[in-house]
Image (cartoon, rainbow, N blue to C red; front, side):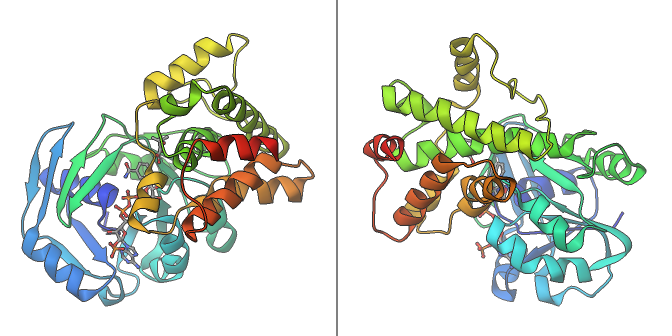
Length: 325
Ligand SMILES: NC(=O)C1=CN([C@@H]2O[C@H](COP(=O)(O)OP(=O)(O)OC[C@H]3O[C@@H](n4cnc5c(N)ncnc54)[C@H](OP(=O)(O)O)[C@@H]3O)[C@@H](O)[C@H]2O)C=CC1
Ligand SMILES: CC(C)(CO)C(=O)C(=O)O
């Protein structure tokens, strides 16, 4: 299988390096020729969970420099906005019958599938990684890539692609990919975004009454939109549907994600665009289309946009303000 990884940041770098270390042939695409030259010189080096691996002399070019129809699989590992803008170019790079596998947080695969339904397979990452410098990455957990057909069910292409990626990186399939993407979305709409607007981790805000109230109400609102869209969220690390013993369920979420610094908070600090339009922004918009109002998701998205514009700062007070409406 001829594989191209587009976006050699935290996730793309770890996936590429682990496949190369197992002798799998991997082509890489960066934004431009100068980052490709830098990466060619640096090679890929991964430390952390899963062990240290290094790859020299990597096959890397700028995205625009790869020939058309050259790949059977393109793993799209950029942030969401970039994924949307370069998806048409990625589709051109696919040979007939090829597959585009986006692995962003949020509803990127669903949005891409509206334009490129023929080729898009749903994907997400339960693997956590950080890029220290171009070519230098740290794997933060023992997570895996999850993939499957957005229309549901299992196909031969999904099984074949998973077996291929499994040569270097743990990859699982699900017959309920939409449900899995929504399960992650439920957590990103709450754990990630509330932590980002509060400027802390989930453990840092959930002990405040407003933090707990906003978490509960936002989670339930997001779940209503998921159900209205016909999705049945899939169990992943925690049960996606809160059981009667909600406190014990919150403790399980805290154990898995409570101490992680939200990626969106890092986006604020680095002045980078966030993925909010594919997280709470997506849920608010879809809720409107489906006639299920999602005012908390809309208010959270507005707060994130205001912080990105420099009109507000992350703080615990944002949570109380969003709750007041
Ligand atoms: N890191 C993690 O632990 C996890 C990440 N995710 C999701 O995975 C996605 C990727 O995240 P992450 O790896 O952290 O992001 P990074 O920002 O570390 O990596 C994205 C990479 O894509 C590159 N890129 C941007 N535009 C292009 C382009 N036009 N052509 C080629 N490359 C391009 C960027 O290059 P440049 O620097 O030039 O912009 C950067 O190297 C996000 O949606 C994130 O939400 C999901 C779960 C965990
Ligand atoms: C792990 C988690 C849920 C933490 O917020 C996340 O996905 C993120 O920050 O992007």
